[in-house]
Length: 278
Image (cartoon, rainbow, N blue to C red; front, side, top):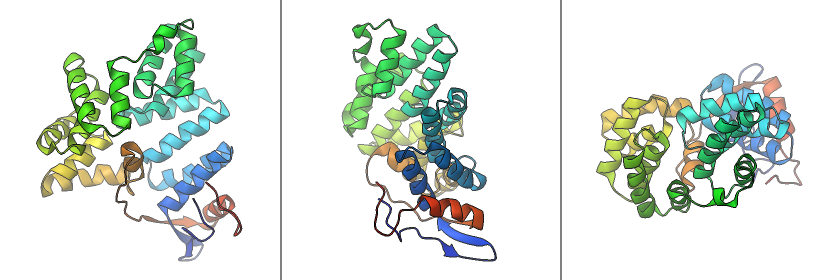
């Protein structure tokens, strides 16, 4: 909830205002919730000018493109987000629909299946899977990957770790399986296993955010120093990690200097003194 004073901007130098990154993110989400994706996209540019790899903003831009039915734009942002978060259901959903709109039905079926494995109870994903598989209800059966994702979403870390360990053995090239196994191992206290997975993943791809987060959490000071820049570039205030884990997460306060025009965009998204935005 955004109150009238929470995250209120402070005046800085000439024609500049200091605001918290979290205030911009809340305002963007409020615009999406209010059904105003164009306004949300305008706020997104304020963040991306300072943090061009800000993952939470990528996800909101995918949502905005979905609302505006700009499928190609959604696909572009989805591909960027999947480099950092290969199991992101919002991104897979957007990518699947964009591919389907191009008439590439065989590929669309495969991508909808990937989306389903990430979030099997998302209504749009279920509809897409049914639509591209001639409405066969059998396609909505939970496979091992979909079941593992439910364990992960429910915070059943031990079950999730065991399930993803088996999935990685069967499909060792699936980065999303490796990341989910690593996170589940970390959350259930298997620090050594989580650290080894994080080391391997960060060597494979420098953009996998959760691998850097786990490396920093389980490694030594050298690992923490190595992880600092990737984390700060993709998720400086920890919002994306908090959304990913779905548990309380300590988040630093990040301040930004914005122009008067950008501050006006933010002010337009804030509620009046008598109201709140959920």
